Image (cartoon, rainbow over all chains, first blue to last red; front, side, top):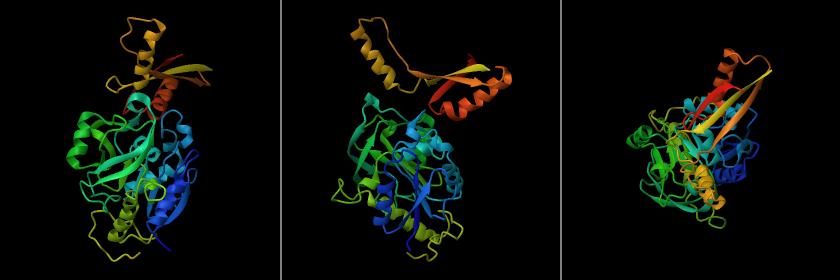
Length: 246
Length: 80
């Protein structure tokens, strides 16, 4: 039995199966989580996948934010549970105010779908430890509402605190500061518009640059010694490692 | 029964590409003199009592929590 990593399915989720597959590829066990169920089933980490939760009505992520499962995730994230929000999952995390800022319509209104070059700006998060700082990676983007906005003071704060995790090399949507992904101050919650789960297999994607995001969280959990989901989750800044095993 | 109207607009500093697209279509209609268009949303919220201060306060709360995202949008609430 590997590490249980939850994947949420909302009505309108598209990429939950790809996320589950990426988790399996990374050597963990994907656990399906249902939007209407506040039970996180003892998972050690959670992925909010891409898609159009609740049809993206009102605003992307606006209604999903109030689902029972997101309520449980917000609470667990505040206790240190690693959470990754991909695309629509990023939008949900911003709407839920686990991450600052918002995602709005792309400049030019075009839906962009392409293999995107990114620069890894921070490896000190629960989801990016297996990259190198400054590493350039290629991961697909596919979104119509991916333009990250945040007020200038908060952007400066993100920069100062190193909470910008990924930047576009060639901005596809007009995001402020070329921001493609950010993390919270505790660095356990990461949101990004690109789709690492679509870049885990050379046969079906641009490459395998996305896989490290899913292996990173396993390393995070090993170092925290919190692989046993029954154990209290340890903080990222707790002394590590404490001898967890895969 | 009464109606409360909530208008939601992107904050002035947030780029509105939809409004820009509308603006760019105006010359094709032969319309001149328009320098800017911003697109927003209007909600008509029906309440089962009178539209009094309490009802407006409730809808205001709803607007701040769900109808608008205060990070990027402003809203106004008024009797319909």
